[in-house]
Structures are given as structure tokens and as C-alpha cells.
Length: 224
Image (cartoon, rainbow, N blue to C red; front, side, top):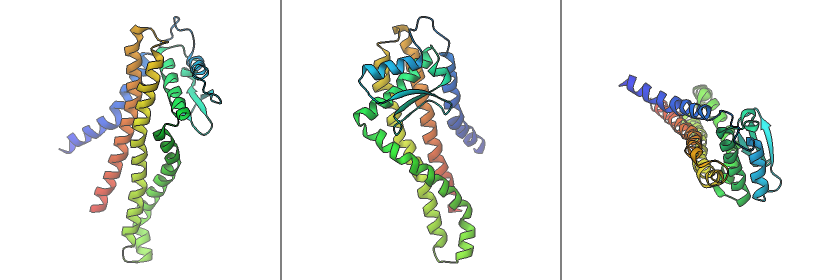
């Protein structure tokens, strides 16, 4: 039973990311029949859609859209690449810029929560490690319970952020990027583009499940 549980947990944590990397790599071959790179497509889409003030930059921090700086940031292989993966990832990040431009509520909520969740998760981890010592030092009735509740809330905040992220990512991929790609990618490449978008989404599904399981793990520990 324990072995099956370990295998199940490994599957949740590892397989989505492995599959996503395999799909991205599979479609990363350079294409001479593509008219531009990922960065060029992103810049073209932003200008075509009339989204002013958003720039496209290269980054080593992973592909993402920064709503505060208003930047579409692409890794080198996607910024300079002329492949199905490069243009699909670029269109996905432009999808986030479209969401921001249109005031898509889940994106705005996620942007506000991310910073809070990161700080809360760090505080939660510190509280969980310090809880027994704080209880010994304070000797206050219910002191340990207060620390535990605060820590659980901290981890819970991170889980909520991951859950909010899911509709944001699926909307950017399938409601924003996919319709745009149909105008620029040959029809025979569209199944591959959909696979790339699905693979990227599954990494967020894995992150959400991992966050929820992490919260559940602490709850089980605290019940002992």
C-alpha cells in the first residue's frame, strides 16, 4: 500500500513535468517555413492587437508575462527560436498580455496574491519548524494551536494561488493563444501547438496538486 502511494505521488509530481519537457523538445526543431521567431511573433501580435506599452524581452527566469513591468519575457530558445514550440509559447505569453489589457479578473487576482503567497509560505515553513520551541518557551494555553493555525493558513494561501492560476493559464492558452495561432501556423501544425499548450497547462496542474498535498501532509503530521 505504501509503495503504491509513493508511486502515485511520484507520478503526480514528476510525470507532468517530464511529459511537458518532452512535448516542448519534440516541437523545438527549427522551421525554415516559419516567417519569424517567437519574439517577432509576440511583438507582431501586440502591435496588431493594439496593446501599447508592452515590450518583449529575453530572460533567463523562464517564460512569463510580468503585469507590473508590462513585459512579455521569453527564454532565449523561444525568443530567438523559429520553431513550433517557440511561437506557441510566445503566443501563450501574449495571451496573458491580452488578459491584462482586457482586465481579466483572475489574472489581476493572481498578480495580487503571488507576492503575498510567497511570503506566507516562507513564514508558514518557519512557524512549523519553530512551533514546538515557541510552545515550550511561551507555555501559553493554546499557544501551539495558534502557531499551527497560522502555519496552515500560510500553506493554504499558496494552494489557493495555484488553484487561481489554473483558469488563468488555460484561458491564456486555449481562449487567447490558440485562436491567434490558427492564423499564423499551418493547419498540419495545429495539433502540435495544442499539445504544447496542454503540456504547459499540465505543469500548473501538477504544481496545484503538489501544493494541496503539501498542505495535507502538514495536517496529517499535526494530528499525530
